[in-house]
Amino acid sequence: SAYLKLPVEERCTHKIWKARLHGYEEVVKLFNSLDGDDEQWRKFHGLIKKFVMDINAVAQEKGLQAALTYAQNCDSAGSSTSEIIEGLVSKCVGASKAKTKDLAGQICLMFCEIETHDKVIEELFKGLSQKNPKTVAGCITIITACLRAFGTKVIKVSPLLKSGIPLLDHRDKGIREECKKLIIESYRWVGEIMKTQLTALKPVQLTELETEFEKLENVGKAKPARFIRSQQALSLVAGDEDNGDENGCVGTADSEEEAIDPYDLIEPVDILSKIPKNFFELVEEKKWQARKEALDTLLPLTKTPKIVPGDFNELVLVLKKVISKDTNVIIVGIAAQCIAGISKGLRLSFKQGAVILLPACLEKFKEKKTTVVSGLQEAVDAMYPILGIETIQEDVLASLKHKTPAVNAESAKYLARCFAKCPALLVSNKKLLKSYITVLLEKLSVSDPSVRDSSSEALGVLMKFLGESSMMKFMPDLDNIKLSKIKEFCEKAELSGKSAAQLQAAAPKAKVVRPSSAPKVKIVSA
Image (cartoon, rainbow, N blue to C red; front, side):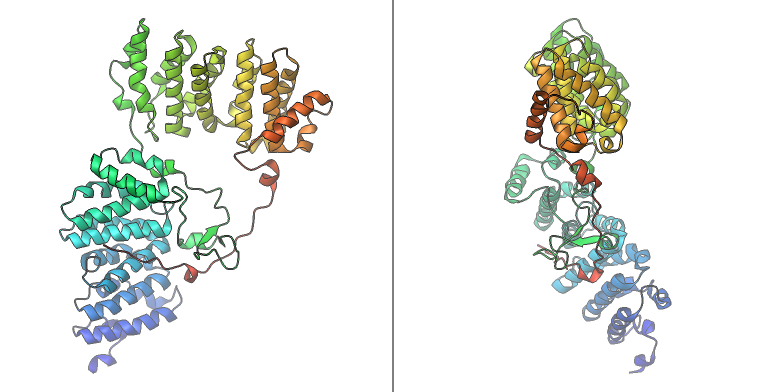
């Protein structure tokens, strides 16, 4: 035929479908032979969308294979992501042929792998507004596959839920079922904290999802099946450096340190706008019932897992006043819970507030009521990750020198919990370390047994973190009775991070894993 004499790019756009089929077959071979930065790629950039939208089913299938090879091998393929995915959404994801849908999914996954995942998801989201239910369901199927393949570090969950949850009420059963699968897959990655984004669901929908959630294993500990290119360059084979694990997955050298934080995966909520207008009036009322009513309305808002940052200054000053001056222990306990919730919900955005509230909470440990003490413990513990071991130094050391033994004891216990989190700064900042050890050693000689025990516990946890030899440099003349008590607490101590020795150990070298070693993720549709 005459078309065989034409350049391959012209055959790919020929009006005769057999010519196009022949052209696609040739470019598959060509694309597999070209270097990623070869100049020949340039003449194909604007043609790939036409490949995937071919009106002939036989030719289209080969065109899809060509598009997949293009995405896999061309260094600049990412520049065409949006238009190619748009073509797939228009003509492929809702197709009747299973092979067409599978190839469309594999192309989407490959474009995610070459780090244009945001564009892929954006175009798939656009597909959710298509009139054809099969297209909508197909888009959700691929979104779920992208999440399953690359995980929440690459595919952000909140936008998926925001777009997907409303479709649970769609009249088409196929769409509803694919939405359920997307939510279940999201829960597999995020876990319990994700339920805060499902509160608007109907009870029957929530019950169905809860049933499916219970069937999942290792919730919140899911691992990606494949990695984007930049991750592959720094990856280690999980478990066995040469052969990978039994599932063929790979893991990054610092995968433990980079564990997925569910906090990063959820949408923040604006709680300031939801605080009742009369809150600041009620909380100043003379009647304790009115003050309690005000804080009772605030408490549920502060339990929001992720809070939108804003001007919390007025609220902080109110809570500080309650903690410092209110004589009603019930109200103080609620205020402490509110502080803990806001600290957890705002994290580093609450640093200014935490600096103001920490000394007030530490001093209030003079209150002996168990409910108040436990609430204050939760509050100061929630503020520690925000402030860090250096910022809390002045307030904690002052509390250790407070005239009230209960404040001394609880402050020492607080330090023990902070030391258990393995603050790396104590390894390098000897001056800071010495300041803590010096005051705690002084407290080993006071008359109150609870202060002595709490101080011994803090020093014991610190010994567990730093190592006995490092600790003994700061207390060489300590008598055996006191030392044995510290060692006793050291043996019992449990660290939630790496010891000083582990922190100082050399990081493992990364092994490069070729892109071709990434396992294929099967696209499962309804």
